[in-house]
Image (cartoon, rainbow over all chains, first blue to last red; front, side):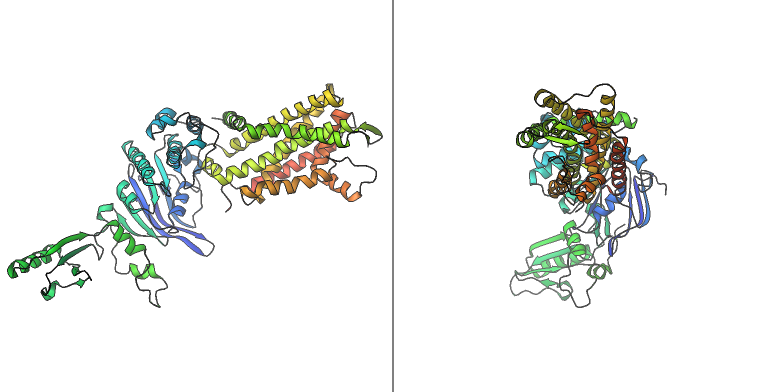
Length: 321
Length: 255
């Protein structure tokens, strides 16, 4: 499968024994794009990425990474990609500069080591032993190593898992720098804010399938819970029947309008007409988090027939384009 | 870039890393000398019959400890350090780069052989000074170099092979020692065989490569008979080790 996209995947399947880790994933990632695979642990993100990197064999489907099939053309692919694995394994007795120089020596057209070290913000540590780096600094070194060969495409597998907030922001700024270099980046994460902050597009993965895909801001659209309207009435007031919703213990009524503009107009019109104040009126847009929890979380009230909660819950959802 | 150039580049870094862990480097060199002194002090006062000849037990230990040094520097070090690199993710990371697997492993093997040669030189110098060991010359020296290189290569290959049954780095030292220590004893490395040595032990020594390698080393230092069959058995074990490693070697942690 030849493709102009950086990554193109169709019908990808991966089994481990009886477990279906990846269950028919389709992906198209354009060059220069930062794309996030977002999902809980065990969703199949790492399996997918490791198939694209050439570490694992797929059981079915078509894969093209920079025009190559990682299963059969890994040798041609290796010089063009940079990989940041989940675990950070580096030889501890070399310095930062030596490590980056060593790895850049493996590539035909490396990027100057000092430039790479500067780019990930480790210039002040260039002569420190790797064993002396903090967790956040080691992760930046991982990125530096992945960049050493000046790759077109970068894989970042859970780049900030286990980080404290400041280390996460360090890592994020490094990834943002990569975008400025025009690199294509595929990252996996189980942090919604990370996907939201870093990615041009997000695919939500759960149970080995993509259940939603699109730019982070648009992911909520098309979901049942996309936009909610909330308001609170003074005690004793009842709203018109077509504007009732769920009333929460604190007196706030929440409804999911089919047409937000129309409903909002009716509600405010009714309030003005009756001289009622609408305290705490707000329009709540679904965040990526809402979508994530709805699509990946366990069902609120599991029934006896919910053996396949994810599939059951997917019924009626429209996949974002 | 050719694999040879890549190996040479990689070798520089392997060497750097080795000397930057001075405690480990120190004991790699001190250990065989320490054993040489301990064994010759405890048991090195008599003579050992080898074939029709009687040799000083202290001289015997020079050859034995030189063999032991090669086994430690190659088999133990390769097995333990590669398992550690496998478990810490270094192997997986390297496997994702264009560096050929052969260059990565060859650099480690060449370095282990280099350390083994240094160790043998030190042991021999020490033995020459204190235990009147003969230093090989001429044809004997040439044969000795062959034995040393074939032996070192074989024990490196076996070190790679045994990583395929080591589940994790924590278990590596235990498994490596369990595999090699009994064999060193059963091959007469620490305590020379005598007339009363049971035949099953002699058979074990005949099957496994350690005794054959030590025979080759002895031929150089003690002037005992040199036999190419010894070299052949050692080389066959090395080949077997390579085949096992090629078939089952893992670039990723096993757990």
